[in-house]
Amino acid sequence: MTTHKTPYRWSARGFVAPGVILVAVLLYLPLLWTVYLSFTRYNGLGTPEWVGLDNYAAMFGDPDFLGSALNTLLWVVGTLIVPVGMGLAIALLTWNLAGGIWLRLPFLIPYALSGIGVGVIWSFILSSGGALDQALAAFGIADPPRWLLDAPLNTIVMIVAAAWQGVGVNALLFTIGLQSIPKEPLEAARIDGAGGARLFGSVLWPMLRPLTAVVVGLSIVASLKTFDIVWSMTKGGPGTVSETLALTMYKETFVNSDYGLGSAVAVFLTVVTLVASVIYLRQQLSPKNEI
Amino acid sequence: MSRIIRTTVLILLGILWLLPAYLLVINAAKDPTTFTTKQSWVPTDFHLFQNILDALTLSGLGSSVISTIVYSVVSPAIAVLVGAAAGFAIIALKLRHGFLWFVVIFGGTVFPLQMILLPLFDGYSRLGVYDTRVGMVIVYTAISIPFSAFVMRNFFTGVAHSVFEAAVLDGATTWRIFTRMYLPIASSALVAIFILQATFVWNDLLLGLTLSQSDDIRPIVTTLSGMQSTYGGAQMSTVLAAAVLVSLPTVVLFLCTQRFFAKGLALGQY
Image (cartoon, rainbow over all chains, first blue to last red):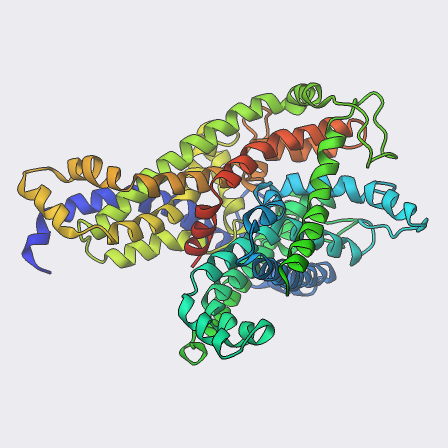
């Protein structure tokens, strides 16, 4: 350390302190407490009783938990295919197109809605005899499926609702990526006769790769935490058939007052989220994938 | 693909995408006394403003609106300043182990909210801040700090250190340098973070659900969720009107500022 920095040592600590203290007290302290509670039996009264790995054993032995984990996996896969894939397609379709900004607008409007706003609209559309059923009846389908009552159909239609919301922002991210691609390699590829699929495969896709890593990573992390739309449309039901891990944690904790089990689910969800981000980023950004 | 085909495909898809919004608006505008779930596709009457007024008195939505405006203005404003101060300490004042402290602050956002809900609920109850405006403002502030520190640290990295040294030679204190020089230079970044975080707070459900219960404390989205369960059957058009009211501010804000929304998203998470 050089001496001229010394005069600001205390001042620097003072400037960084509010942020560190707020984050430590409101985020890290609760985080550690949740980890501790996951090894205890506790319902909010008295003191937590240490039970070792009992909550984790109970969790992995519970068919409802496994169903919830499976639904969460369905959310991760579903929101990768539809919103990310379709976002890329829309970005490519509007790229260099006159009026592209206006053509993208319909997809952007749903993005700023809250999850509950989306849930209210889609519950209305999918309700029995609701807007979708009326439209199907007009095409002669008199006996439509029970959208929100049967699993796994209810999870699938909720993924569609989430896709309706999420496509626009992915399209916007990919559009910004496409616009930042330098003109020279594109011109060179065009002169060489590359067009359509070849242009995409050999020039655009490699250059979009770092951005794709971000979009896919965002999508995975967000879908693992899926809560609002499900809370609004089915509350995880009927029973527990459309629960996601985030919902299971909430119900175990705040409905069943099983704090230990709820905390174990939270820890599991966090570990999965962190592992997914690390594996994904490492794979996408490793040097051998750089082009 | 030719331009005409591309444009046609996009227009058709766009119309499909707008259908749910169309259904929301026309049904939110229907008179609740004659409302029927059998004729969802046809607009019948224009009762939207009356329905919004009715919605404000249901489930205490009106008092929720005021609380939510407070939360989504005060918390992001504090978080922006706290984040900027951290960035200033790390970059301009060259805080010892600055990068480590930055990682500590930024690490606060990488785990799901589920990880902190129960201890916050428990702690808030014990300290008497459960179901209070102060409690909500504090938690929204803490949640918004990591992203704010992240952007501000990046921003200050781009400010030449000679600016700081020149000010020191003029005898300015660090506080003065921060408030009179660094904050004004960073005003565009501060506004961008503020808008992003205000939208996040406005749309929050989970913290509202966990840390509040009374009508005048609950944030607006949490109230809408409760309203949907309670009145979704009998007063559907009023609930839909409430959804329009809740959604309008963020949709307008987002459409006006979409570019830095997307940039912020791309930057903020990794």
